[in-house]
Length: 231
Image (tube, rainbow, N blue to C red; front, side, top):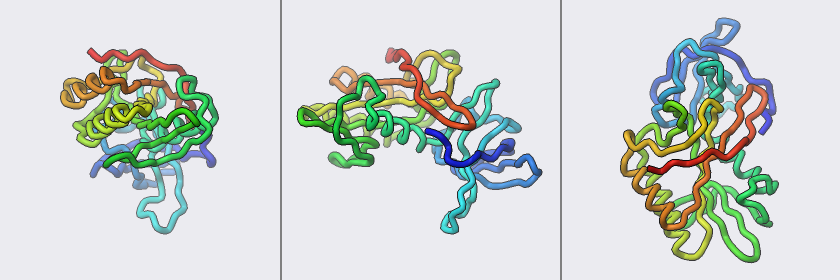
């Protein structure tokens, strides 16, 4: 995914109210940026760190900037939770996601039961429901999810098991928007119930993939699959 316009460089002053952050731009202006990340953003919040923003010229928006990434330990970390959805959608549609190839129909935001999944794909033989999660938290060599308790995330896992029960393909994709980790694992210490449900979903037949995203100020692209450790 290539950013359509040049990103705006600045430094983080502080994040507050979950969805807002103050940023000082290179010209000295202080602006308010929106962040779509509702989690704690543990391990990717550092006041004074370099950040990149997207400028949004939309009179309906209260903020003119969207926070895209932050530089932590010389590595860019993507924090826009909408980016992974677009990456996976494009990869499946263009048959670039090896495990999810050969689907002739691909659509975003499809409802099943009482949940809405990020991507739906189908061919003459099967239907596939795909949920995508953004991962930004680093603990040692591990990327971990979630970084805050997520009842919604647990609900998605339970619904994916319902998808599987009906004989359809159920897939969970964790997109890790940082390259300074080498494995993925659930954050047992933050949300034990989510971790337990993830194990249950895997045993039930829900497919799990953790894929690294390479984040730069010019573009974000999917890279290699990372090993997953559930226990």
